[in-house]
Length: 420
Image (cartoon, rainbow, N blue to C red; front, side):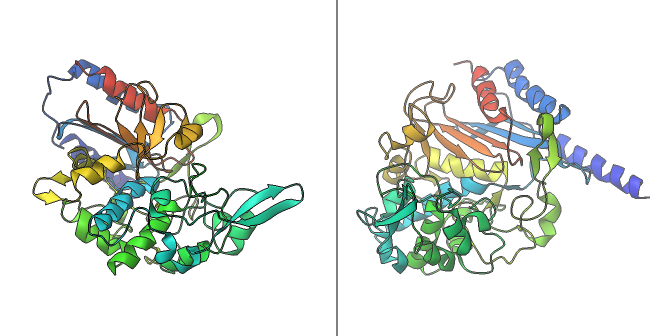
């Protein structure tokens, strides 16, 4: 009986995937070359490099490629479908950054405004400097600003750096928070966590280095302070509801439990193994306390939802009748605002705007045009927006750690299919 039910579940999932609407042909793309994407992804599944994936490509707002391959939960026999939910981790940052810019447009936040105006513990911060005998705590040379956080130039890491990790762990952060960024299991509001973060030393002076860390989680608290509502409510009322993003939430409703893809890890010999339960694996996105709304890494979404959010950004802040941001704000977000600091972190020709990595030189990120922007998430999700080519690329999978090169190859396979 159990085997029969399993077979029925697999069959129904497969039929749902096969019956999904297929994108209409687009003369800008070679159908034969586009087919290489699916063949590559299926090969990755067959070789056990990934359990499954959803790939979606928009051209001038219309889908030209959509494919779900493999398994959303291999052990449960659930196939991947275009409707599968994914933990998007750091892809949350773009949405929280958009929330901040919306409040900047209202005059409730200033880009150069000190964070201490919203979170008192950040009024005077310290920096941990390595010495021969350990660390020395020195005062920050200046106040950390909203723009420092948006560009990740505030000097704030995830607290897993060896010279500060024990201090962070003692405060329930860094090594005590999964991989540093995970807070879905916390039963305290994000502002309470961020207030405690402000008492800890950071690892670089404001404005002197690109340091990837809690920056956007702090911004999530700023959204709450400036708007008077939780980050979840602000995102819902100001971004996801106006854009009709029905599946982008911080926690998955119990009724949608089976839509959430399982997390896998790249194991020995490059083949997948199921990730464990808990903060470094499956997480608490269904059964957790549902209290901590992490602006840096907390959302779950679908490929279709996230692509729609990106399409709004590509079109200058509006989609249909919904205007989320002004064109000028979008230009700020998608233009390098960090000088060469990000290039020293990620490589030549790459910059960082107010929430997005920017491509400032052709070839810095594969075949993407200059002016493109994107990022990814710790669970293996990734995206790219190429305004010059009218493209939005989204690849969703759940693999942490991700020992594959599937994401850059996916982007290459999209570009090689272009006829122009």
